[in-house]
Image (cartoon, rainbow, N blue to C red):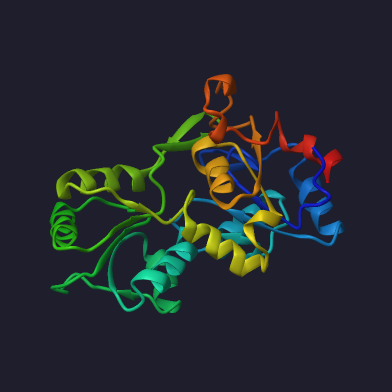
Length: 268
């Protein structure tokens, strides 16, 4: 596949560009060169991770420390895409957040109204990355959802790829509990969602059809690209490494498959 007609790139992080083993981050072979090749071609890229325990600049800082040169504005998370969703659907809503202190501070700085523990009303519930599970808070959120508040989640995928096997999503676990208690289905504002597509379009200034989405997860990365009509490339270095594509419906398959990002160098 040639990618010289693609105007911008969206790349996943874990399982695609890096692998995590505990606190250690290992850059995948060819990852640095692929990002450098995109830059050298005069095109832009963003990295989108469904991780939401920290603001985007903290993720970027961690990648730079591991040896992957990424600027702060080249990284996006559900803490960004939830803002796109709220602007389009619930601009002035007061949000009950399940997330870290740094995520809370980031959203407040961006103008999102986050309710405190004494608030009697929440217009929306957003599950990012909870640090602890408080059943009183869970019950308050479930009652808000029953009263009509949308249940938003950064990710509903059960796990993502780690160097030593799947790393389970706390956000997905908590979202599942709330969805069960309130008898509802969550609205995903991370990958794959139209909120993410809108956030990427705003950051890159390009329509989705001019993008290539590259990642290791059929249900998140490839689904995101298919949703926006983008070119899609599955990297078999992560969570979908053992998937038999012949058994996947054609409408869900990627446009191309590589074993690792290093194979993209000849396509740029």
